Each structure stands twice: as C-alpha cells, then as structure tokens.
Image (cartoon, rainbow, N blue to C red; front, side, top):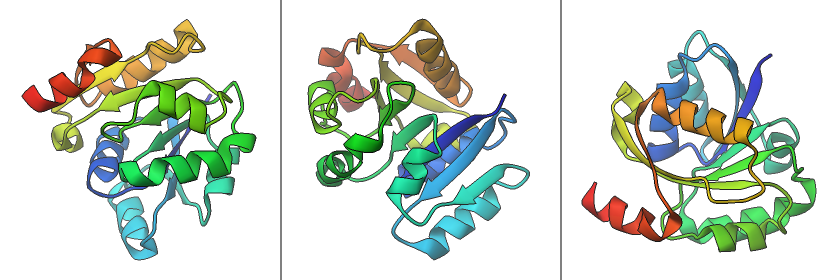
Amino acid sequence: MDIRFGCIGCGNMGGAILKGLARRMDLRFQLLGRNLNKIHELAKEMENTDVEVELNARDLVEHSDYIMLGVKPHQVQAILEEQAARLKPSQVLISIAAGITLEQLKAWSSGSCPVVRVMPNTPAMVQAGLFAVCLEDPALNQEQKGFVQGLFADIGQVHLLPERLIDAFTAVA
C-alpha cells in the first residue's frame, strides 16, 4: 500500500528531504509551494517517483497520510489554523519549522491529529542528513512512530530526543 506524503513548503530544507525520500517506492508525494515553477522543477528532479503538484493546502491535506510542514516558522500558525478542520486523527503532521513547539502545533491544529517535531539538515538530499526527532505526542501510535523514524533513517541519522533537547541539538549539529 502506498503512503501519501504531502509537503507544504518545498524550499531548501523541504526540497532536500523530498529529494532524499524520492527513491522510496512506497511513497506517493503531494507537493505545494508558493513558486509553481520551482515545485515543478522539484517534481522533475524526483524522477521515477509518483509526484503530484497540488494547487492549494486543502487538497494536499485531504490527499495525504503524512503532512510535512516545510514553511518558515512564522507561516505555520496560519496554515494549521486554516487546515485544522480538515486534519484527521489518522494523519500525522510533521513539522520541520525551527522553534515551533509540539504544544503550539497541537493548539494550532486543534489537536486534530498527532504531531511530530523534526529538526533536519540539508545533507538529507544525499542520504546523509542528521535529524533530531521528537515523538512525544501521546496521540502517535507505534506504527506511526516507526514509520516516521524509518522515513528519516532512510536519509540520514535519526536521534530520538525529548522536545526539551531539540533546540540544543540543532545548535550543536
């Protein structure tokens, strides 16, 4: 069964992660970004991959099992508040936005779905990333935790950390 992986914000970091994940045959990708030309370029770079470019966040949320937020931290709240009613408990929200806590992610998404906090770096594009992953949301089930951990392990080293250590890890890494 294919897993639908959506990404809102496919800039430098989101794009690096997506390029790294493009070799996974179990993922179908939904991409959304401000610059359609760049999104289409990214889709072409992810050759031999099932990629759809979405035109709005509503469609991406409705078509994704896992949703990665690759936008700037100041954009996260507005996106989540706008999409909160569409999020389902079976979906998982993955944030790579620096400085946005699990508590904020849960509040802004109305607790609609489990959330994961990840702090990545750009070598993910060549399967050499370093990821601090926080799986502390009690709404995450074991299957979801395993999937997220495996997802990032495919493109680099994963360090499972409590949220209180994520920012320190980012500074050191």
